[in-house]
Length: 393
Image 1: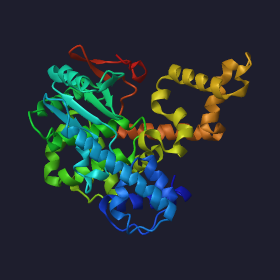
Image 2 (image 1 turned 120 degrees about the vertical axis):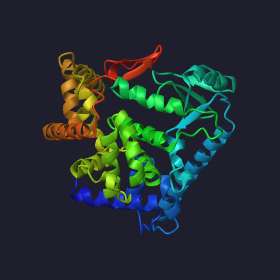
Image 3 (image 1 turned 90 degrees about the vertical axis):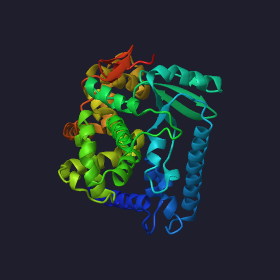
């Protein structure tokens, strides 16, 4: 990545660093804005907008985005103040991460995630339904409800990992923290694990800077060197110690996080590739320039060849003009694979990227898609047979 793109990404990194820590940014442009938008972090620039030089049309667009994000954050916090759920619950992910930011209202929020005691989950869902929420398709981890465009997820389980003991451990830490409280907040160490698992969850499907910055701000606020041993023990229980160390060190190297003694054992080559991967994959995979090779090189496809071939065939039949020919149609998968990979050179680059990425995942302790996932079903934790057997129920 790091030649001409190196300079572009370096400018982006420096701008993000300035926005997060409230430092002067000098000037910016549409390219920086578009990359912020791809990662869902435009509103972080709010504290430095007045001092940052940019074209007038860009300023108008950016300020509109900031106002929209802040208004949405305010609507969600108001929604929580009127929340109909009366059983004990805790808030997970976005809103729970915002409290670590210098300006919490600038943390983009897309939904409200809560978790109740399992015996209270049905009562929580009934309360939402009785107060005008409509349920949309549930899945094996949570039930989703929507009202006036606002989404609420009620979790049966939280962890999305491939090890039964790890899944049980992180869920139990959350469940044990649910108390009758008006704050509905997890203790900081448990909340940090939730944010770290959120980062882990999205590593293979499009990790963005939003998840990385959540972790960074938690580390900044809550993990000085003297508190690391306690957190390390919790992270070990859920298989996330290596990810915690390397992600923190990456933030120190590239995003301005002050250094910690406990992160110095990280592999800086892994940190470099992790940063490259985050910048190019974008928020849930929305970074445009990464999309071409992503469909071919993602590990979840390569570890499931039959699913890969079915997907390539489906896309090829849709995109290839010769697929209407009965003789050509069976080969639509090959045409689509080469097209997505950018030709033979692009295919080789895609496979090389995959190998590097797979090595990075091994170093971070991320091995989820190969081994099936753990779900909580009928009162126990069980393994699925991989991502492609995850069914709505």
